[in-house]
Length: 172
Length: 279
Image 1 (cartoon, helix red, strand yellow):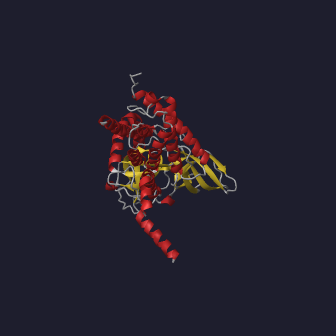
Image 2 (image 1 turned 90 degrees about the horizontal axis):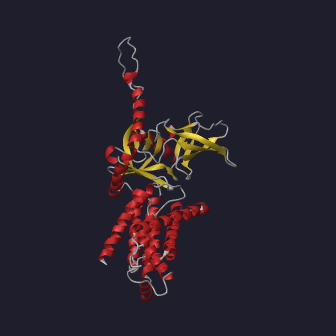
């Protein structure tokens, strides 16, 4: 339990700093903007109280807004995914629920499950961020293209981060 | 009343979420406008400190190019030195110069954080109110103009870069002298759009675009960019010019903040005239 808290606190700061110091400087194109920091929200343990998830997501968004000068955009998008996370988890739960001690990772839950879970959150977050940033519908398809391309790229990066940094479970 | 209370308690998760969203939107509207006082921004001490640390580290990677650029600039400045000029050795005379008075002065600073891939791009620079920086001062690099100061803390300033959807700067064509507002096309970080250029002018691609005196923020004649293409949009009697910015906003590191010594005088005069007009 304590190790989980330490591990998640560490992950919060590492992902925040990685996002603002490294990923922010990666300019692939105006259409592909990476936000791998939401991996923090994705990887909170299954057992976490949903109010706590919401609060932590809110804090993560607020910190991002400080660094990105984006005033509330990330706060709003992060609280959104913090809010829908428990419902998504419930919707795609395996028939006999989640085993204890299992992490929401590709290694533990399989790629298909992770695609449905993280994919939903990534798309929800990116849609919110890009539409709030421009705040009008006049360039709807232009913005939609940014959402789609950026979501794909962010999701790819999130998967890569998980595969690289999380050791394969030895119990298999 | 009691029913309402139980309703809120039962759905407290949703209400908590709505409360957080309201806070987020409040921040957004409080902060969104150019005039609004900024609560969240990167000239904040902790945030700017972290960016400064990272900028200090990454500065080493660009030292060679930066040295070359500064050496080039030194060369230009050295050529303009008075000691390089030939003095007519005819007679000694003294001039009390009443023709020239310094109007613009420059304060050098360094960029500690910048972005180019958002709709509203800002930079943070490491000079602030303590060094005499105020809001609405112009910012340039040695290659061309960069933006306008929007917020100032003790040691840092936030600069609204040219790549900000709400920024308009009055610029003019060097050859034709015609001016119009320069705005960002929100497509890529190398180009802006200059509008309101009358169609009777003969425009060539490659024409130089410079700042105009009208803004009162930049002195006249600072480099902005060159015309890359131009078109006349339907039903418009003006040309729209695509301008390639001469400053690479992704790489800009050393900047100068431009202080107009006469700005207050000019602003107060203009305000007075306007008020008299309103009466």
